[in-house]
Amino acid sequence: MTDRSDVQFWDRVADKYAARPIKDVAAYEAMLADVASRLSEADRVLEIGCGTGVTAIRLAPGVLQWKATDLSPEMLRIARGKPAPANLSFAMADAELAADGDSYDAICAFLILHLVRDLRTSLAAIRDRLKPGGLLLSKTYCFGDMNIVMRRAVLPALQTLGMVPPVTVLTLQQLRQAIVDAGFAIDTVRSFGRNRHSHYIVARRSS
Picture 1 (cartoon, rainbow, N blue to C red):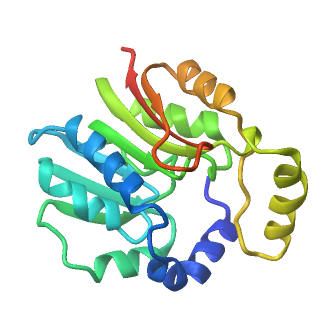
Picture 2 (cartoon, rainbow, N blue to C red):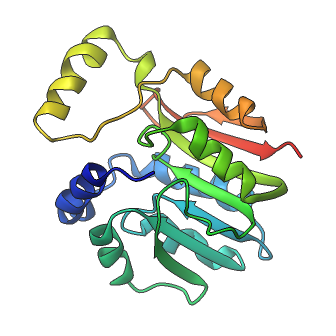
Picture 3 (cartoon, helix red, strand yellow):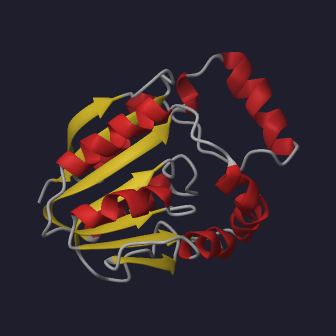
C-alpha cells in the first residue's frame, strides 16, 4: 500500500529529477538494448515506477502496448508532457496495484524494487499479473552489499536530510531469493557500467 510520505517525496523532487542527466549513458543504452531484445511487437508491457517516462518513451515503439505507472502525480505530469508514441499510456498506481487486474507479457521494474515498502507483496502482485512464462525485467540497487560506512552512516544521513527516500537494504542474494520465492525462475543477472551494486535481473514466471 502506498505511503503518503513516498508520494510527497517524489512530488517534491520531480522537477529536479527530470532535469538530472543520466550518469552513465553507455550503461543505460546497453540495458535498453537488452530489454528491447527480449520484447516483441505483440507484447503488452507494464512498467512500474516509470518516473518521468524516459524509458517508456524509448521502448514503447517496439511492443503492442506499454502501460507506464507511477505513484507520483508530479512525475506523471512531466511524463505526460513529453511527445510519446500512441501505444504508450500513463497511469497513477503503486507497485502492488499497477496492473489493475490485467495480464501482461512483461513487467518492467527499473530502480523501484528497493523502494517498495513490502518487497514480497509487490513481487507477488507482479507475478499474478504476468501471463505464464511472462518476463520480469528489473534493475535494483542492492544497498546491503555496500560498505558499512555507506549503509550505516551515509545513507541514513541522506535520508534524514530528505535527499533520498526510504529504501529496503537488500543484498543481491536476498533479492534473488525473494524473486525465486515469488514464483520466478531467474534467467539473467548482470550489472551495466561502473555501479557494481545496481543489478539487472531478468526472471520468468514459472507457471
